Length: 264
Image 1 (cartoon, rainbow, N blue to C red):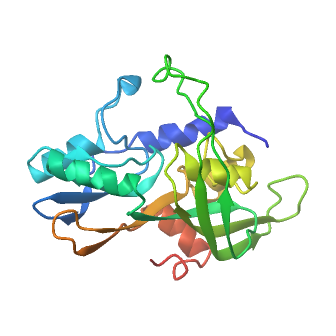
Image 2 (cartoon, helix red, strand yellow):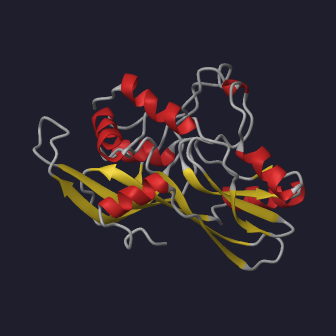
């Protein structure tokens, strides 16, 4: 797999340099608040990114006027539904719900190549340490069970020879549903299947990342947490949280005539 790390770094830097746009709140009540996290935004402060000034947790707290507690995470380059609680007690309840797989998560992704209509990848993932944050972690941890279900929503073949092996380039719009929640699970599973997510600078194909950047001005990873479905931790009522797309996602969906296919 051809990874062009030098040019791919531009994807992160361009996405990271976001203007101070206010966050988009997609749901709020006295117990919960959910936002549509933008790509490139960290969930909370980290000593690994000392130069950052915008964080989803702090922006959400400022917007709702009270402390908020994270109950799950989204990778920095991933956009979409991010849920917080307004109390530690509700946070514990939600964390248990995520751990016990009582929360359904649905993502959309654009991947390289044509994938089968539907399927499941059951492929254990080894511990992925961070060079700094996990400096003293146990590196001998056994691989953990990781299961992802997928469904192909749309496909397109473009008349561009991104790879020297082919005269055209193929892409698929995928619905990805993780059954487990391992670090970078969807990104690693798609690479394992040889259908990496477009724009992924860690596990993707640099040639296709560069092509999308040049042809469609797409400077982000095309992975979006579109929907979160759960029972409300206090009322027990079913709750469906849906996040819309940003300009770059909408541009790709329109260019490829995938708008209807991408609807939740």
